[in-house]
Image: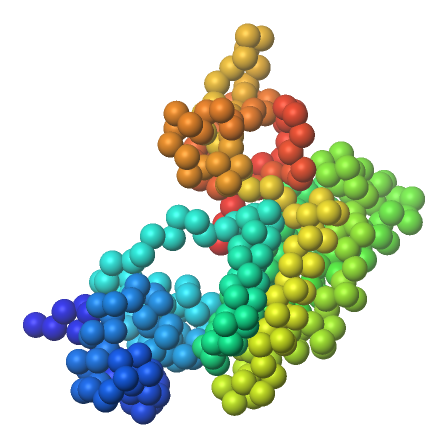
Length: 354
């Protein structure tokens, strides 16, 4: 009876997803001599984290997505490379490396993007960039951006209840978009509707704008965001889609400088969302109860602090007052307003959904 690891090795060595010559070349570069391909792949996995090993041997996000699908996973074609690998390993019954540091909110994603950018710079300095790095770094960066934009749309769609049916449909459509440009276009449409409502005098428009102002301190959930800065061919086509759809040779011709430029744009976009207070904050509720006046209270930490053991985590806990019975699930991510200042009084808070 075959083992989960042997099934993975068979898939990689079959030639159905990546050419055997390409796998053999990776092994020869690693070990300095030619060895039987299945024996070499097994040895390769003994020396690498499984996620990293698959990524190095199968230099194609689409191929990995196809492998996951053929293994029985409903993996979407736009799933990121690392996520597709994890789904493939899980479907095959292989142990997954820990993923406890997966960033969710803007601040954590900005930090992660900075780490990716520094890694690119180190590789450039050492002159060891290859096509695998050229493709995976920008794609990972833009996957984080799309994740952040969609969670931002989700947050406002959940807290803004006093909006008309047409705008509700626009929020629903924005949540279903999968790639950068469609998500940005949908967000721009929502922003334009709020700008138009601000100019009207009817009661529905006033109530809608008033609710946004009360919950966010702004007249428009995306107030101040320059969509033209990012929803253009230079950013979308050259910075993101190029790495998702072009062949390896085209990626290699563009070189490492283009990778660095693409990542710079991801960091600028996150910076804008943070500076303009558009991106919500990710928090983890840790406890709930009452104060001395019997008011409902919720204690929480940010995603930066959730990894601490409970004893150490307590000194980073903050609190908010909540009206009504608290029914929020503890120790799971939620979205709330940005920035966090002092004690919060009944802020909007919604579950974080991938």
